[in-house]
Image (cartoon, rainbow, N blue to C red; front, side, top):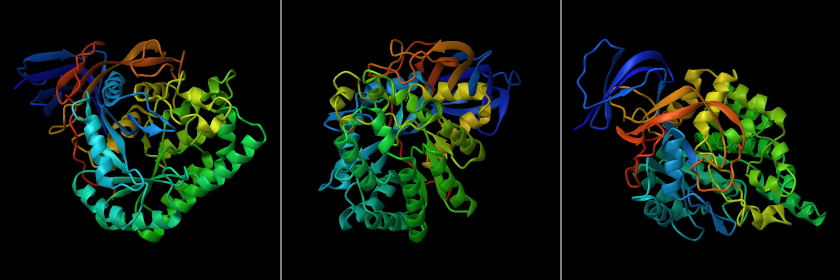
Length: 462
């Protein structure tokens, strides 16, 4: 049994900031005390002077090895979780996928097999339900018991993941009884497909048209419809990757009524815009994701939503495809560009920059990146905080270090960075996962197979 003492740092959680020493034993935090007030013996002492001591990030929206558009996301569970650790994230919640015509069980077992023995950090699963029927509805109950307590449905991608309103209502009704949380990709996919077809017929094939056909109003309409269906079903609702001011307004209206409706946004919507989609020579393809990047003026509404708690979580929707050979599948037809961006390594740093830029406070940074995603998905207080009894998932963060984000230095298995050349202040120095050093003073010491599957309880906001 190893005892580790972290001393001399500023401990920041969602609720507190204090100079404290943290004692770790057997993979868990066992005690905290005002800096220097206790004389603890430890096998290993980590000096955190001039650094923040923060909970490991919880990224509740990743897609490792996701099959999409005839190819696969380029990060495996091994490369993706290693990159996550480099970025200060110590838990991911990835999406297992039900294939239409097959059971939820088959889909979940496939993802268990992909991740088993591969992960550098801990992981959990949501379940994508793409075939709502009597059998899959019954299966949802068993998955909640198994610790897979959230289910994603799609109003987008007809013929792939799409569910109609009746299927969505039935899944929501089931979740209202079994304690599951319904996650929604809210875009009107039927209408979008019409606009895609019309754009291509006009010869509008460039990446920028991806953003033009997936209209803000079709995100807002779907968000509104999802909220009303959840009200009818008596079900909670979590809307993923909210990108537009009008969609935030729908969430705010629902929350003002006291409804259990929650929203997530992602760094790409806070830091990137349609300007990126318009980059010449097909470079805009790098930024094709859904919901799409929006005009820059939407960013203010997203930051405001994060401050007012109309948006509660920032996750990445990490789903990387290499520019060469993958994004290029859509040359001459934007609808064939695989949808997704790399970001699991950048989230904690970008949000720290947002603190420096005055968008959010330090504690809010930890709240939206660590504590709330852990609570939302039944992982708290095991994850998302630093407190006696919690897993020793701890990051020593240097708030003074400067860095330039670049594909040349990142650890994600993708040939470009969505934030190439962006200068930021703040960088991960050391990362512990359940008390084990994964990053030791900017050196990777982790290993595939350290990460364990985490059984989740139900949403802790209900």
